View 1 (cartoon, rainbow, N blue to C red):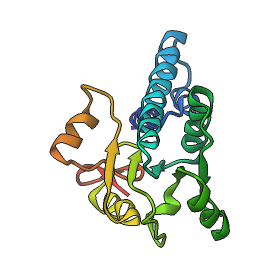
View 2 (tube, rainbow, N blue to C red):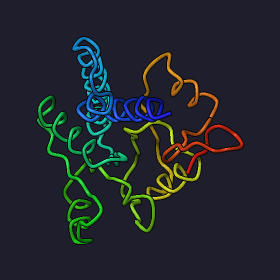
View 3 (cartoon, rainbow, N blue to C red):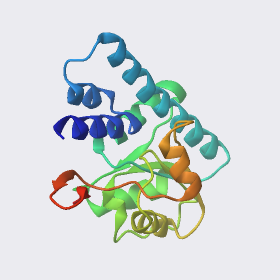
Length: 187
């Protein structure tokens, strides 16, 4: 059961672009596998960065949602390294004045789960998700911040995330723990 949890978390971390945490979670793995994980995670960030840059070039205000701070920082770094784009971040603990400033001067802002509730962001034209497919409630909460507009997911081709996006199957949230009656349950 523990190995399943580790594999699941490593998959999530790879999809989020956080290869360091994915490799650490898997522990003692061959260098070739670790290299593949790093390449896949970076490839994901490159594709998200390309999409963000394209949308910004079209004159759109872009909101990017990442589940984890590390993912936000990594994407911010890729956007700077690849496209020389200065991108703002707004995370839990940041003062409201920072958000006001970002809305006035930044064309792209990366948010963490602080964007789930209580923020009004109608200035943004589109929403890009770094994360895997969330459940419908979470998607609605985040989408509601921008009051419509375009929504984008970047997923790996031929994966269950691509399939879930096509048939609208939610990604389970939280940790998995054994249940006496049914095998696995989400907490």
